Every structure is written in structure tokens, then in C-alpha cells.
Amino acid sequence: MKKIFITGALGQIGSELTVKLRDIYGTDNVIATDIRKNESEAAQSGPFEVVDVTDSKTMIEVAKKYNVDTVIHMAALLSATAEANPVFAWNLNMGGLMNALETARELNCKFFTPSSIGAFGPSTLKDYTPQDTIQRPTTMYGVNKVAGELLSDYYYHKFGVDTRGLRFPGLISYVTPPGGGTTDYAVEIYYEAIKNGRYTSYIDKGTFMDMMYMPDALNAIVELMEADASKLVHRNSFNVTAMSFDPEEIAAEIRKHIPSFEMSYNVDPVRQKIADSWPNSIDASAAKEEWGFKAEFDLAKMTADMLEKLGK
Ligand code: AKB
Image (cartoon, rainbow, N blue to C red; front, side, top):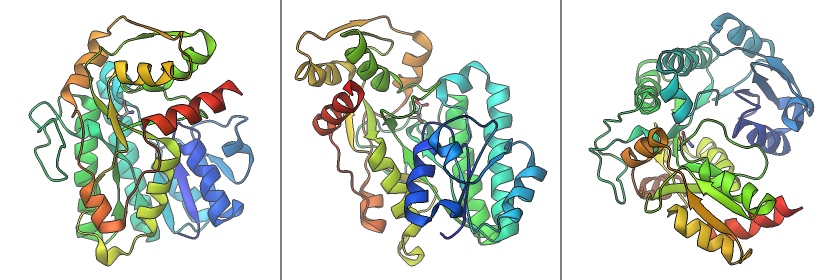
């Protein structure tokens, strides 16, 4: 990766990924794009262009202008928003991906896009979900992710585009809040613990989902993209995870730092249904074996760091 083009650069992952990639590869070598500009570090600290991912002409023009060799396509709607607007989600998530893959094909670029634990469904084995298994999701987001994995594989086999991807679990960060996801409760809970000492969870106790701290997710993207292609058996996409917990477990961990923290429940049936259709935990052994994936943060270490950073 020498000259990197990122879509969705001001989103939950993109805003931190852009800054990290600029640190590694040089400020001018990371072209951040999003549908609008803001005052964030990712938008202000280096090259930025307004690109709507459904506009293929502008996307290719901007990528050509900077002569990029890598496309990192992050722009997408998350699960709960996609479920509320399925047609819009299909058009944005699939149309954007197709345009990004075409840009990569035309410019002979390496390509990354995230998949998700949402690519699994209720008929998938729920515990320690294997890398290669049944994928029949029942959400629009999941349908987009499975189709995206297949489309990325297609561009690799048909056109030789070096496509790579990760099935991300819920990502937790103190920098940019997520929006419209099912796993967002595990981020909100820290903000509310610091601000109000209590949290009302829209996900029910006993609902286990995989999670990962953002620094581990960013490292995983860089490591996968730098991995020796000859070692990759899989490409789109690798299971990755750092921990699996339910709302009670994260609340108990927060209480180790804020003993008076109170947790209550007001379950949102839409997001609960999505969560119930996803695995309890996934098996990341293919990622470990093929390119050395590892996560530094478990629940205890992440909670200590989140509360310290948010407290400041
Ligand atoms: C979501 O909840 O939609 C995302 C995801 C797990 O893909 N965080």
C-alpha cells in the first residue's frame, strides 16, 4: 500500500483508520473521502475529497487524480439502519461496493472492504462459528455482506483484483461513536457510565455477541492488507474477534471501576431480533493461521482503557 483511497473516511472505522494510515504511510498518501466534510482530524489532517460512493464517475476521477494503488471501501449503512431502510441500504451498500470494486479494477489496486458477523444467520452454528459455514442471514445488512463477500471473491477470480476482507464483530471506541448498528449498546454503555452512572440497554441480558476494541480492528486491517498473498487461502472475508460478552458481563466489568453503576433493560425488538440471528461467538483460527491475526484487548483491558479515556 503506497497511495490509499478511503471511502467513508469520516465514519466509525474510517475516521480512526485514516489517521492511523497517515501515521504509517505518510499524510499525503492517504486520500480521505466521504459524502461531506467536517472538522474531524481525518478530514483536516491531509488530502480530503467529497465523494458520494453511488457516483462512480466522481469516485474513479478522484482515484485517478491521486493515482492510488489501494482502495479501502468503508462507506456503508450498519445493520439497524439498513433494516429500517432496506431498499436504500441495498442501493448504497451494494452500489457503493460495486463502484469501489470497479475503481480498484480500473486502477489495478489492492482492495479492502469489511464484512461482519451479520453475514451469518439463524441457521449458522451459534457457538465458535467456523470460517466456512452456512451463511443465510435474515437481515438486509447480512444479505449485503454475504453478497459483498461473493462479489469481492468474484473480482479476485475474474479480474485478478487483490480483494481482502474481515468479518468484524461489534467495534468499540472512545473516538467516533457508531451509528445505526446492533452492537452499539456496547459503546453507549461506557459513555453513559461516565456521564450518568447508569445505562438502559436495548439488548437483553443473555445475548452474547462478538466484540473488538478499535485499536485491534485497525491493526487487523493493516496486517491483512500487508499479508503475503501466497499465504492466503481465504480472502473475503476472515472471521476476527477479541471477546464475546452479554450486557450483564460488560456491566459487571464496568462496576469494577464504577461500583455504583446501574443497569436496566428496555429491549428494542428490532435490534434484539437482529442480535438473536447472529452468532454468540466466532472462530478466528483461519485469520490466525493465514496471516497471524491477534487481538491485544480483552474485556477487562478494553474497559479500563475506555473508562480512562472517556473520563478525561
Ligand atoms: C452492527 O451492529 O451493525 C455492526 C456490525 C456487527 O456489523 N457493528
